[in-house]
Image (cartoon, rainbow, N blue to C red; front, side):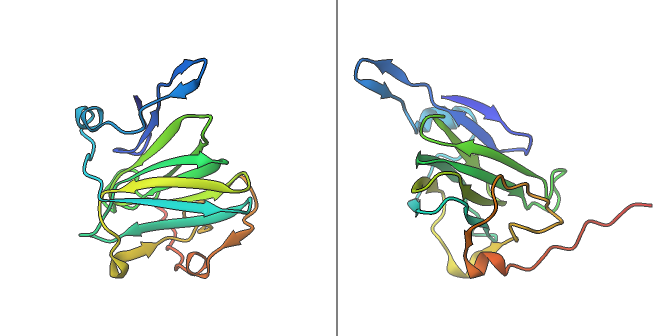
Length: 181
């Protein structure tokens, strides 16, 4: 695996290194030793699957409040998605900044989402399926989110949003950052 650090500290785009022969490809999608050498979380307690029939479906921007924060390791195994993370750490120099990456089975890449990052994605192809590991069990009372269309974030989604949950549409808007004069 090749670990590419993203502009938001602690976040990585991980490129799988396939072995290809007449049968097709084989690649490791998880290796405790390689993650440990990078200083990344290696204890995942839950695996999730998200299947999304429609193009333009948006899920996010979700995170869990402390002390229930979770690391996510996200991979698209069918279709394609535009995956976005936002730094929600108030004391971080990249607070409220976002990064988006395209994930698909052909790209052979995964997104490592650190604790205290909001996460969401938009489907780019029909019947997109996303698998992800998480480092903490879901705690319903700790669930939180930021609006996917919040002007204070300015996330540039690649397609018009065709389907989004009521919950994701109704997270409160952030206050715009103060302007220094």
